[in-house]
Image 1 (cartoon, rainbow, N blue to C red):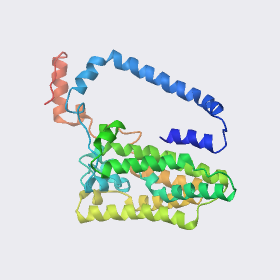
Image 2 (cartoon, helix red, strand yellow; image 1 turned 60 degrees about the vertical axis):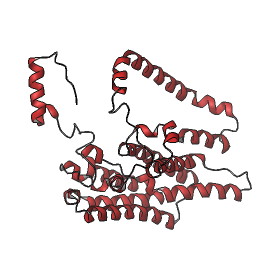
Image 3 (cartoon, rainbow, N blue to C red; image 1 turned 90 degrees about the horizontal axis):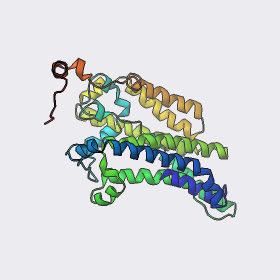
Image 4 (spheres, rainbow, N blue to C red; image 1 turned 45 degrees about the vertical axis):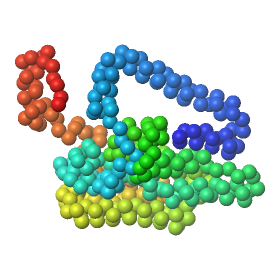
Length: 311
């Protein structure tokens, strides 16, 4: 959706007045996508029996996530990134069923919504002031549309068949939050590029609004964990520092102070994830860290052709 928005932006903004030059520029990208599909197709064909066996299972082959499945605990977990230090201490209670499911990205794209909306409105008003045809910033609009669709799927029940057509039902609500991670990268890049292109800074109230959204999410998550007496709150390291850094980063990016803003976000990320990514090997190394894993390894050593059945 964001890629479509970028194409529409290039076409209708006047950067590419005709379709053919624009389409010619995206031919390498489309060709790469086609080649990737061919490679994936070959991989599927050569492993079709295994894929069929997996898809015939209840988990994960026939698992469908219904629209509106995100509950109160799921919302707390979604905004729980500042408290993710607890996960490295082996504590997930309050943030999710386990460390993997409890992991959440910084919801930067949500915190930048005031800035994105301001950029969208500004693109319209600037075009009107210049006496030109009204044009939207299609890239910014596409980010907001995708973000809205994600939240609608997570919170609003009753439209699962439509969501199924979009492929949203094929992931759990906990794992779907990876989409927010991708949108965060895109939203920061697009917002900074628009501010740099026009050599402007967001209004002070726009920047503060983003900071308030970020700060409110931390306060609400903290209250939920404290009210529920969840162990994750006590086990979370540096969550106060991380929270301040995220709020400051959002405000600085909106004010076009990109380097210190991104640096603050990077430090916050390292404080909660330095020992996880890219050094993460697993919550448990089953063959070494668990009694069951060691027992399986011993059986495998004696009988390499053993057939295992999961119940």
